[in-house]
Length: 243
Length: 243
DNA sequence: AAGTGGTCTAGACCACTGA
DNA sequence: CAGTGGTCTAGACCACTTG
Figure 1: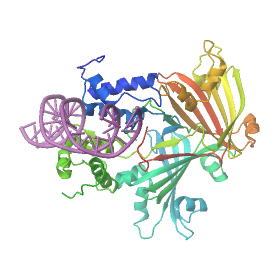
Figure 2: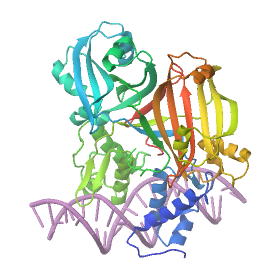
Figure 3: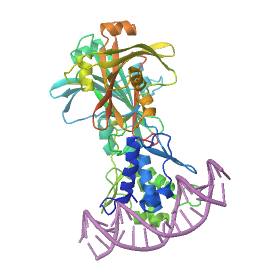
Figure 4: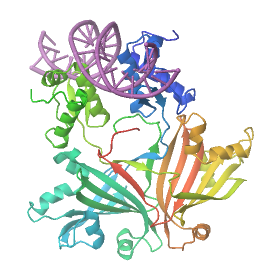
């Protein structure tokens, strides 16, 4: 009975907000049981499906989860899961191609691409990345070079990795794994990035994988310090939106 | 008419799977319009709400989005958004407290905690982290030390940061921001981590923030190479779950 | 047996886009 | 105008948990 009505706002959002507020303010805490659907139906004078819609939205956003036969519980927030943006191409980021060659892969690349011991060539694409005119990172990408396949050129179209490849074919057919490490600049990379032997680089490796765990591509990016910083968020400050 | 029925599987999941498969196989590609709700109602001989439930689940998983008055479109997958796990405490990870002190903060910490120029003390908690008996990382945490507040001890309970603090009060009231950089080990850190001056460390900074952007805590972790590796996933290989 | 959430239906009205 | 998705309802049956 303590409810405003007739706002243009959908009823299910009103209910969701009300519950969410209680969770955020700590009136309801992780492990606590929420009021039952039927209780909410009476409290808000809404239909059961409408109440369920509210609860579903809270569930999607990670606030609650349900247990059939028992009820809805407040979840424990995952403050150690981060959503991280790693934009291959941003507005200010410029790429300069250094080289595109077909080579016999190093052991590292063999392992990364899951290529057996057989001698199999790979395509190596190297770029330097620039941010507002300043050297920012060195970027390497590797793709298996299959004889049976088209030309290098068509491989190259794929080569610019997911974001462009995505536009071409079944972009939901693969996913990406990322590994982040730190590395001291090796001699060749010192030359390319124009840095010294005591420079610590942020190294981001990426594996492009098909749904059946086959590896489509492998990339590595050496990012200069001060320039490069990866930023991630955890918790619930952002809209739930997609994944 | 081309539909199996009477499986124990919920109808809405059957519909969702069918559509999802078309998207994954590239029959439907980003930008394409899906069949309308009413069309699916006829095709699958289900009610409209059931069809909508299917579509809602695909939307939640990031496969599609809707535009009122037009229809449902296949989305463009975000292959540059990564879900990254940064576990404060894993099974094998051991923490050894080094020190807990109340200090005047360095400039870096002042900025991180958003403390003005006024002389304000902060609590510093330092730990070393060990993985299977091997030194793994050096961990620093800072909390504003408010006079009006309880004792240091009660602050300390908060201090172990979100995961433990979470259990205490309104854990949905704050979120975490993470920054990842690479850094060469400084002299004091060389001693603590027992490494040399040419060691590149992975540095993870974390800001614990309230919903109104106030900063609750600041932490920094220096992770030894070879030991530490951050791993993230993008795309749709994982169940949608949470976040 | 009573209460819970999970699925599903057949209708209704609305606001919007497009021809 | 007909077609689309967005919201909402009042029922129904089910499987599950708890006393």
